Structures are given as C-alpha cells and as structure tokens.
Length: 337
Image (cartoon, rainbow, N blue to C red; front, side, top):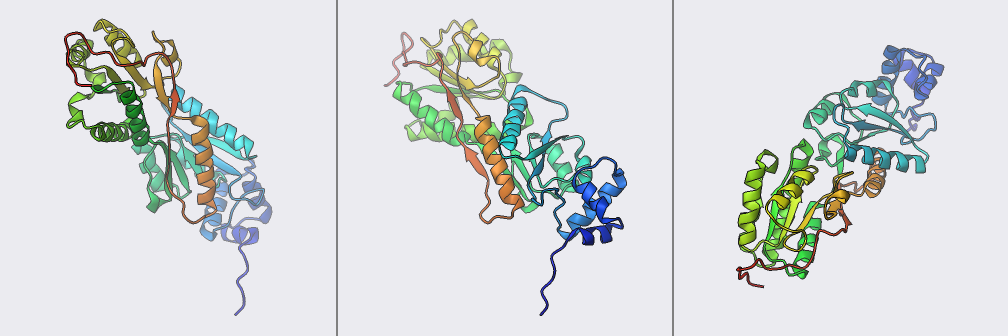
C-alpha cells in the first residue's frame, strides 16, 4: 500500500483557494493579507491538521488571554511571569482580550494560556475556538482540550494549620472574603483544606469558626464576631480571598485586639498592601514564576499531543512577616491546650 504523503502548504493553498506565498504570509502574520483571506487560510490549515508557523514548530507562538475589564495586580504579575517564561524559551506571545476571542481565527498560534477566569469567557471559547487551552486559576474541561494550573489550596491550608498548631493555637477562625468569580473556586479548596486539617487535630466541628461573605458584612458585624470568638478562645485568624486585607485589619484594630500578641493573623497576599499593614501581614501567595513555567510546559505538551497530560496543582508561596506568633490564652478563658 502506498504511504500517504504528509500535508504541506500546497494542500492548504489548494483548499483555501489561494497561492502558496499567501499561505506563507499568513503563517508569518503578515498584515497585508485581508482578514477574510487570513481566516480562510487558517480554517483550511486547521481542517487539514497542518501547522501554520514560520519556524515549522507548532508551539513557537501562543496567545495569552487577559480579562477585558479587570486588570488587577494579580493579572499583571501573572502576565509578567508568562511573558518572561516565553521569552526565556524563545517563544512569541500575542495578547488577546477575553472580549475579542474571534481575533484568534485570524492569527496563527499553537494554543493559548488564559489569565481570564470568568465562565462567560470560557463559554464563548468553547463555541468559537478549537485550540489547546491552559487556564491559570480556572476549572479544566478535558473533553474540550482544556487543562488547568492552579495553586493547591488544600495542601497549603493543611500545612498552615499544622504550623499554627505547633505555635499552640487551638481555636482558629476562617473568614471568607471573595468577590471575584474565580475566587469562589479557589476559596472552596481552601475551605476543604482548613476543615480537613482541623479535623485531623481533633476538632469535631471546625466549621463553627468559619465566617462567610465578609465583604457583604458591615464593619460592626465583623468586629462583634471577632470579639465574641476571641472571648471563646480564638487565638489565630485566617482570612481567605484576594481582597479584604484593609477591612480585616481595620476591624481587628476596632475590636481592640493586638497582632500578634492577642491574635495571629494570616491572609492572602494583596499586592502593594500586605507588607504595609501594621504589623506587616504573614501571607500565602501564588508564585507567578512557578505557575508560568508549569502553564507553558503544559501547553507545549498539549500542542505536541504528549501522553499523560494532566492538570497541575502547585503549593502557595509563604511570605513570612510579623503578624504570627505563639498563642496566648485570652484572660479568663480556660481553653484546653
């Protein structure tokens, strides 16, 4: 039986109804080609399974999807990490807002890394784009060739609780600050880690010291909860969420509690704020460099169709500051140690 010849640019040109030189110009993102012709060539190449890339390598150029509306510090740090990793590998990057995904039908990229976490973005992606996708801090969807790289909230919370336990903390509260859509997914993992770790230390019902929807609570409600739980023996507090640092630290001060003498406090890193609280806040933070390396490596594996591709969970980075110390029992309280 005669062996089938590999697909080449002539086949793409024939199917798209253009010249071979036009296919080459599209592969090099030459902007003299009209949008309609570019889309036709890219569609033909994808239909034939042909890689349109000037260096004959399917992963040299990738798209990075960013939120079209919110461009917060976290996104900026992740974008910097991804761009540095691509530069280190000699790869090219095209930044695409999540509100303009259709532009990918006009560009030659091997796959995409999404910094956008909104479900609306991914629903649109599934309907219009067929490229391999790695989501940072988002849910995966293997049936649609979408994998994820996320911080491991379960492992990190268990490690944090173990550290607090060594410092003699026994009643530890968990306050939830979550407003962004992606934080709901992340906070759920942190809650799972918190509950599992507390139960492993013999706490029968640790959820009684969880306070939800703190952004919707008034300062008076937060202060009252802090005072009540501290009287009951609470000596450490973790607040989870990308925002809420300022409000939490202010309420602790209004409750008359000293950090860390009366209450050890641990939060999630908030850029340009956590290190300036009084005292500077002990935090957990995603590591942009490590996440970027993992995301780019995973996307290359997907583009190359490597076996055993899987989602990646990475530990949070610890940023040790001055808001954590050895537990002290509130006066008049007889918490078992």
